[in-house]
Image (cartoon, rainbow, N blue to C red; front, side, top):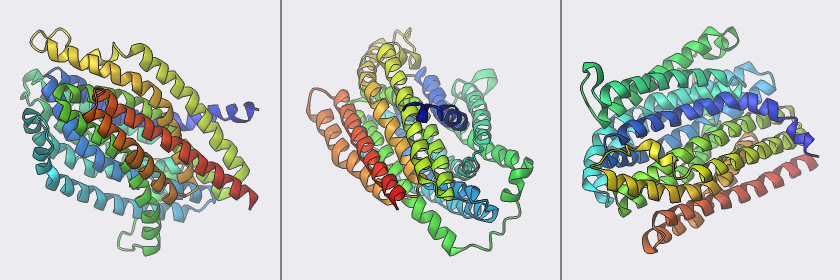
Length: 455
């Protein structure tokens, strides 16, 4: 029985591991920023958390929108239609560039909201200059996403990984030089971290384009674009898939962002602890994201071949693999919940010892809850990937809205601000929202695939 699914594990992992490493690369940028900035103090760590909360919301829209390119390219590849694959990339690049510039402008307009959010004043003052630079890095990041989703649609998942690894090396080097003022460079604190992020994302775009152009198989797709010839039909198709996908990711990221803001109301230590737990859980989430791309590509290929029984079997094998991996991560969080937060802070800092001790205590409680929501989070994102491969995006968007904003957020808000659970209460809401999403999305996948097999 299980061998029907386990025999797919090897190929699923081979397809998804470069995506996982690439996605981990994005998170590792934040991880490196957090560890280096954490050495400056809890106010600086909270400021990076607050600034990134705005950027993550915008980034979720950009990354979610760009995922429309993958199933279109995968379906074209399955059907052997190069022209359609190239068209999906060209129109995707145009839309992603416009979206990146728009999101940058919107973040700049939203800066004054920080003063109205009941956040600690010293945190807001530090966060604003950081936010301005990191917001601009969204433009190259979302253009990179277009190339990344195209590459993954052709089952070429290694190139985005190479580009992300290079970006990480650049980011960490600039961070080290500019946060602390090493080797005679100016000491810029968290602004140095923002410069590192911005420069590394421009390099990432240039490098993935160079890698794709160099390979003969992909050269035909990414050269000779005629941007004056834009087809409304293709634009509409990408928007019809991309907009709901962007909303799906937005609804999930927005509830985690709300958790950052609610934690800020509880104080800078609660916010710093929330940032630590969020950064750790987002790293394990990237494994689910990578497997979600594998589900999207493989389901998209089977849709192109019109083989729905095989489509269902392959998707279920990815769900099963995700479940097993997430159980392992849950165990790591349970066992390491007291030690993991100490990576982010200078535990020998006598001046900030009380603050640091409180942050570690709160973060350990949050990681206890995060251990359980690993499983729900991984399952829901992988099933969502399979549904995107089927190009089913509207009903899943409604499901994610209900799960996160009608179930998860009210619980986070009430338990976080009006009970003694405080930070733990905020994360209880996250756990219930993710679990509701996983259950409802699987019911949707089960219904759709059975219907397709029957017809």
